[in-house]
Image (cartoon, rainbow, N blue to C red; front, side):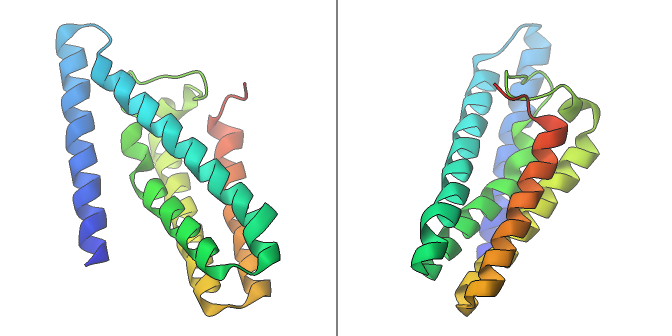
Length: 154
């Protein structure tokens, strides 16, 4: 059932973003719906950042595998739909223009992030601290890879 929820979510977001982009293009001006997409993606990135920090700073040391699994699952869900939150014309201070110039690469990096987050969730579910710690580092590497290419530091 979970896969269907992900598919439906991605399709709903894609439809929403497509509609908003088409409206903005039709009106020839910046649309407040695009602003809402930017705001939502920023919120999702902030949540994901807090989650990865909690994994490293709190959950791993405490051996709280349930919290790691929950955070990693949430991060994977965000990464699955991340690319649709970057429609044309949705630029923001933290996003480099390269995202829109290299959308396939950006999407591939988001998919790698989702896969790494799911792997972390699986390792946390196994209860193996060493494998969970390595999977967390691997997830962090996918974040860093994308940030190096596509994130403007403030």
